[in-house]
Image 1 (cartoon, rainbow, N blue to C red):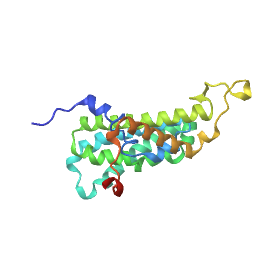
Image 2: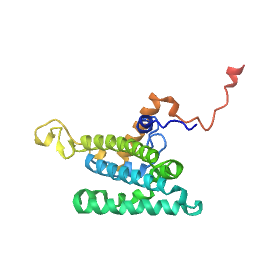
Image 3: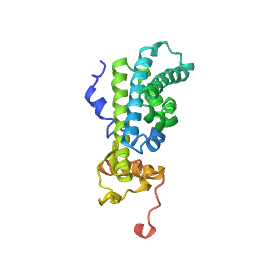
Image 4: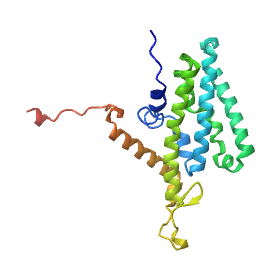
Amino acid sequence: MAARFDVRRTLTEPLIRQNPVTLQILGICSALAVTTSLSTALTMSVSLTVVLTLSAMIISVIRRHIPDSIRLIVQIIIVASLVIVIDQVLQAYFADISSALSIYVSLITTNCLVLGRTEAYARHNPPLHAAVDAFGNGLGYSLILLLVGGLREVFGRGQLFGWQVLPLAEAGGWFTPLSLMLLAPSAFFLLGGVIWAIRTLLPTQAEAPDHVPPADVRAIE
């Protein structure tokens, strides 16, 4: 008898315990590149989640008709087609954000998270299950991007979604923006800090050491 599909667990597990960014280290390129503001982080999050969910559903529907020898080619074509549609929509209705995202929307096509979920899960499960799994992983990815994007924007500009939330010193306030937060290294360190915090709270996520140092001879004696 097949195990009962748990929708709630499938949706919530990728948020923290099985987060694709902090646990599986997927989608790091966009997580570092487009999180200079909440608006770009949100746009990338929505775009990737839509592409991931739709591609997972489509691949799941036709999974029994895809020869193994060309499965990756078919998956990339489906994902690329959806990315082109999303990119055109952004250029038509959100030109400024599309310009800020630059090539990173197009790079969703080769995002390890998208290809990983379609290959590992969508090809082996029914469409509804695949869609829920993809949507949950999209939410987990979005959570990290929004967290890092919010921290970078508020400390780098004193703003959130372009609205001034911290009074700038140059305007008589107390806050001096940290320009370093808008550079790529800050995203790297922030993401590393998030991963460290999660793995400290959830030790089961920490990998086993690759090398165990030899025991102290004096301790053995």
